[in-house]
Amino acid sequence: MMAIIKNIDLGSLETICKILGDTNNGISGTEISKYLAETSIKDPQLNSTKWKRLYDALSIKQSEDSCSNNILAFIKYVLRPSRHIHRKQWFENIRTELNYVLSFEGLEITESGDIKITDKVKTFSEAEERAQTLRKTLLDRKIHSDVLIFCKAELLVDNYFHAVFEATKSIAEKIRIKTGLTNDGSDLVMQAFSFKEKVPYLALNSLQTESEKSEQKGFSNLLIGIFGTFRNTTAHAPKITWKIDEQDALDILSTISLIHRKLDKAVEAKKYMKEIYNPPQPSFKKEGVS
Image (cartoon, rainbow, N blue to C red):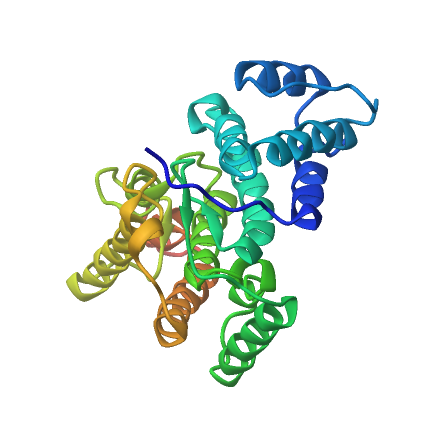
């Protein structure tokens, strides 16, 4: 049996309902009715505004139960990953916003959609201070600008994993932009950098010597390792159990910074390989012709 979890602060509950009932990015009014009915939470329909209607239903239920278990079960039900296989980015965005609020309650929605107890953040300034400290240290390391944008308080209210996770996703996005490919993770890396095809999509160098080819293969393996650790959507254990401290985050983000610099300099492999496969033909002058 699930342990009794104390009431969620009404201020936090209001913010949760505003996130879920947001006009542009939240769930629809029809979905609210459906999910409340399916989780056996009465809809008093006191307000027509989505978030207020949701707040009325959840706050009344919590008051009746004297605990938040059914409220958390509702959130878990709404964010069941299998519901959102065609809008994964929406799922991640909503989960990040909700975790920002839930962190003040000592709770977190995991990547698998479960809710777990975690370290409680007491103040927003605590998260801000953590973000500023990380950003300052990374600036001292002259970190790549594409990595600095992930040093946000909302990504650090629980631990540093969220910042690292989001920064890793930016690597895949840069590769897709440079190649036009649509894959993700190791499949994207293999398609972009491997020698299975005559010419890879991207090259770090001219790829003419064994040393240069080894650099390309090593970089590809580095990317696969990064994705395998932080982007494997079927392996939930790292997100749930792996506590990344500040030093871990600094080292990993520094590696991601190196990757971004390498990607910035990478060019279409065909430009490097053109001379190999289409070498310039020598010109011959006919005798007596200037």
